[in-house]
Length: 190
Length: 344
Image (cartoon, rainbow over all chains, first blue to last red; front, side, top):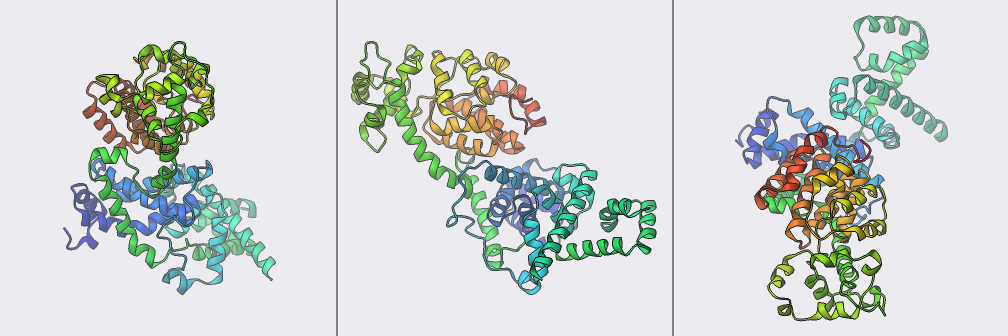
């Protein structure tokens, strides 16, 4: 199973993972971890909660693999779980439950930017990222799913559990706010 | 097409999600409108710059191992999966909840059973002073030895529950052997003497479940009946959800779970419920506690995990009545998982 995992379809990997093939599960995690993290970030708005939700997503995926139907595409199923995890973590945060303290939190999140961001990390990207972090979660999520993940409205609707029309209106509002925030930032900075 | 109409369609146009007819109209407008053209260009620039800060290669290097470590931990067995905190966040929560629960359980054991004995004097010293709030061996005996009091003892009023009579402390400190055959079972029971509520009491608790006050819930227990449970009846009074009806004694995480569930804070409630279950508990309380956990998982649409918990209940408690009742309600819970009980 380990040979050619990179080319294997998600659904087949999921079936193998459900049968106990850890390398297949590992391949699925590697393949989708960044997208899951981004989706969780879009739901939570901060890296610590995004990490928590991303980890939880894959644990839930593993637990749920026995009930996964390989006739259904894996991506939307995974995104749905990730979205729910993100929302769940966000609810916890909003509820005022003691959060993981800074020193304990996501042992993993590296404060330094990744190579991708370093290479392309121009001022505009940073400003856009800051502006996106300031969006309400529902707007931020559709923006990430569309602009970063490149999902169609139907796919976003499925992941976020909202009608396609709502996807469009949220995207429109998200872009308006972001453009306004960036314009305000430019004026303030100049 | 004017600017206003164009701008309502511009997002979908930009995303290629507009029907052909509308697309052509927008294109027509854009040819003669630099303002809308600039807006479209702004969207394109925005999308090109949109990103999520990447946590860095060090993070990704450890990511899979951390996931697999948690998966391995859970794969140790269904019992472990059901009862253990699964990952960082929950472990962090339990770091605070478990010690707090232990202290609360010990204090509540003294408070609760302190005034059970007829003729017991009123407390001369408040529970906070006499109660075993630390690692005092005598205090632990209080908690353990008094877990399953006789049925009549459970009818005490909330006022008497606050007493800490000398006699109860003497009983608590008596050698275990003096308590007869029940002793060994007592040791395996819950620190806070968890058991079921009567239908009436459950109904009362259900009515109060919106309250975040543990005190109020504790006071409601003044109507508690001896032991046996009739969850079905109480649920029909309290509403469709079993959340309100499976009510443990006032150990902190158990109450937390209930209060948070009543507020729709499912994940937190799950964490608290796991902490509640992680305590050494009596069989009836454990049975209902696991059913409650299954519902909390269903509420979070974690159906496969809920299935695993239900299988565990089936295994440990064949013919479980609480489980039968929950099974009847489960389709509704799964259909409207986020609905807070009582608001349906």
